[in-house]
Image (cartoon, rainbow, N blue to C red; front, top):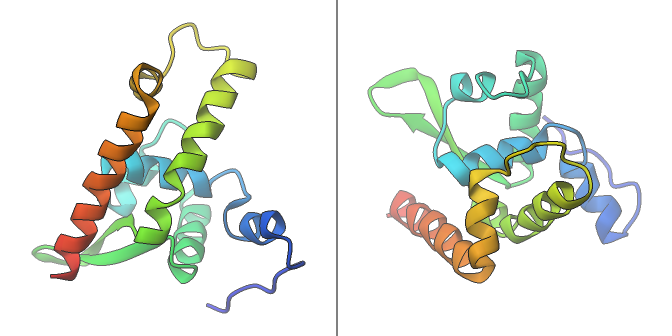
Length: 142
């Protein structure tokens, strides 16, 4: 699959070219909260992503180095997806988007469990999640 051309050299525009649709950051969210996942796991998310869109977004994220596709142990048909170091670096931005959305948009009576942890100590939460995902990446490379 060919990488799409950038609309401009603006960093916001270039970033949105990769993950500026309604699904890509949800895939990153799921990988952040649930670590390695299969294609089938993504189809079970509350947002009900269509399989053709999921396949396209996974390919775009993989082509742009945000996620890594790994072979599934003992199953040649399945694959595991996980965040690359470049994808892990997106987590602080994703947390800020989630906090903003909860404050200004969300109608949920009860906040997200992971945001409750973030609000207790954002720095600690980010460090723990990013360290855990980075350690998993290093284990994958070894």
